[in-house]
Image (cartoon, rainbow, N blue to C red):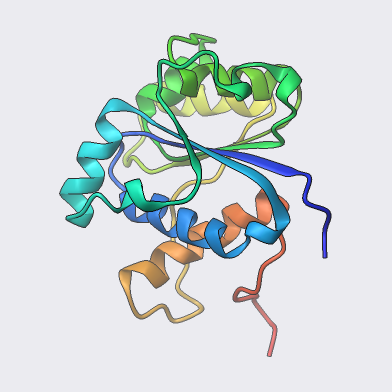
Length: 190
């Protein structure tokens, strides 16, 4: 078993795809033994989209520390806090644009700025389609700065049966990128 040094921030924006955020949070709950902290922050629209798409406000029931998007006193607003990973899931194109231009007007974009300046892991689970050239250029900018773009593009070779199974094909990749150990479908494993 790994040591419990992993500290993760999950930011949820108002892009469509709340199922990805739910599956991510559910999986992180099952991997708690690998984590010393999970912090959550929501954009204004994230909660509204969650309620619309999933029909509930279950996001309130997770045992993680929740921070307001205006709370610049949150520990991960500074590089000295030693959070290892920030996962923005789903990541709206507006959030991506603000990160790409270095605009830190809320806790989500400030945390992203901290991850980039400290050379820590920033994973952006983008969901929009189609992409404009502006989106592509913003993805290029953040990638060159050290972020990882992990589009919410499900795979189907594991033969997923439910919406959650489909979302898990993306989230399993995100969990791997975050450096956590998990049991998940692996191509070619019998």
